[in-house]
Length: 187
Image (cartoon, rainbow, N blue to C red; front, top):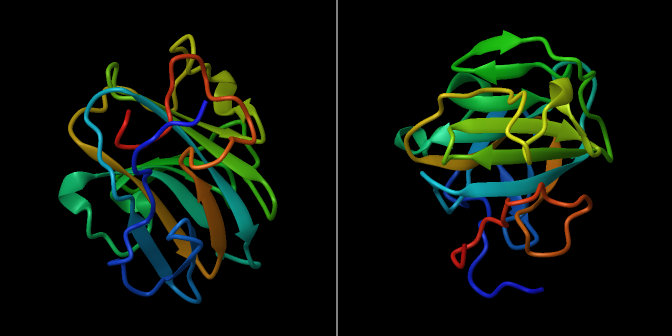
């Protein structure tokens, strides 16, 4: 059923990015540029999807994840400041340190999934309905990262690329894990 309330979108205060579609679509023309979401969370379970619209060759890719609210004005890669999935090669990042995963990344038309369980301090990433490293957000197993605490915001970073986000404003391409909700004021 439809949930009433205001849904998260990308903060238009981020510089160097072009926003459209109610600040759900975002693109960067050159160098790393990032944007935080407009709704933060310190508890609860949330799910959203990021469709890669375009990535160019070389380092022109996206990172998708969460950033600490203390760094809400970041203007670069999520990789350096939060927890992220790097679409170029499927690596996961925390505070600038990358770790290989079993994912080969995501390209044009692929959907990157994010599931965050702040009640248990965990985050998972998926691509096209396959959770990275056999993760299972519904059962709480094999998270990309754990021991996450504090207040976080969704975050996206682009290097000469673009993507479209769905925080639940419309039907998700894939079913949210059991117990996870859309990111909106009603939740």
